[in-house]
Length: 238
Picture 1 (spheres, one colour):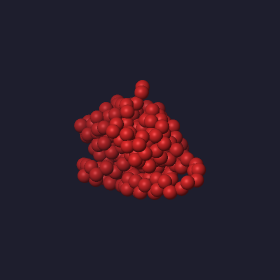
Picture 2: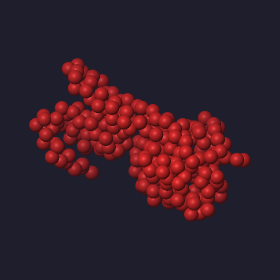
Picture 3: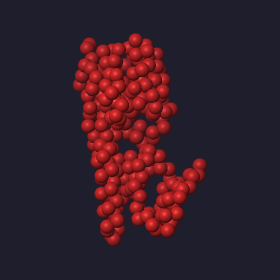
Picture 4: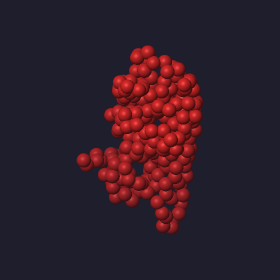
């Protein structure tokens, strides 16, 4: 479909009152990118999830984060590990699922198709519905890697309603380390994205682009985050 106009700010760009723009958005489709390019304004994207490579972008290394989480679960004894994904999240979901799958492969564990459930939303209800589907399996997982913290909170709600204890019966992890993660019950094991540093690096990239008259090649920068271990995960006793 055709993207909606960018709005009043487009007038400022067309009059060259804006030299550069940093966009922190999960969805910047090709039509919007074309509008920005038409105005000749340098654009730096932060964590864009749409397919295709932007010329200038700063990303979090989502595959590394998910790989780290899954490796941690393997190290504490889990062998039946599921992944709950967000079908709306494009590249980010693909990368987080890839990290999960790579960790299983490296550990010599099977990547069972039935252990990957993709929800239509990244909200709590998506995690809740996906967890219900996992409970219907003949051999339920002992750990669940969730696309984000909100989905993990939804998954935990469904599991507890079905008398599954967290983390004694099933460990659950999130991603992003939102403020609510620390105060969830139990507190959520998650992966912390360096949000502040993403912004700093995007601003520095923009300044470098604005302060050079030379031709420059497309630049993509990936940053890595940190595993945060809390009470929603535990060692699997076999």
